[in-house]
Length: 226
Image (cartoon, rainbow, N blue to C red; front, side, top):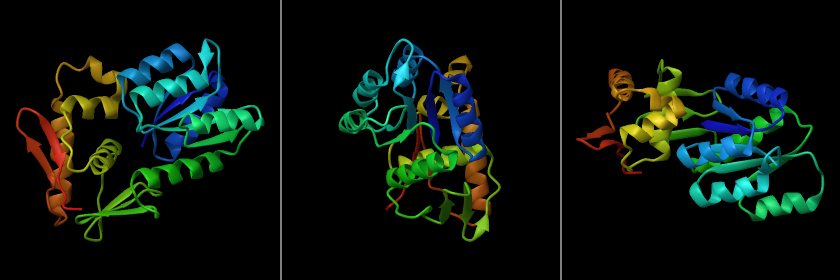
């Protein structure tokens, strides 16, 4: 799961980022409205953790940007106020959840994983697709009962495909999802092909069916009858 943290308190942002990275999430940080606005418009994230009080704009306005350009993106609001009207306003604008500061990181983690299960259309932390079983809590994948030794990028890529099963994904969209704005520095996207090739090999060597299909000149698709 790829998460954008929008929080102007850099210490808190760093604390959240460090914790979530330990939980096997992919994390990016911004500290201002303008930087967050640019990231959200240009790149794809599964979730935004959004502070309402930003130095150059409001989190509520940024929430409206999210829902305009990335309606599928989940949002957890962070607020320093207990006022009910702020929470209701955020939920009415499309936020998925909210936390009042101060909060425990374990609670944030639990709420993120609840939203992730909802996005993956499962009430459990296990996802079964084809010959694969994905444990969202442990960030592991088994193929026919055999644990696959996946790199972080291979695991994130597989989740991205499963979330978008039977949809064509371009190499550019995969690169941007996995590497964010660093993907712009690449001369080509051969590294995407290499990651997909390695992922396919690990699945087939474990006896699984290759469901990652190449669409010549366009991209890739995770094909399933589910």
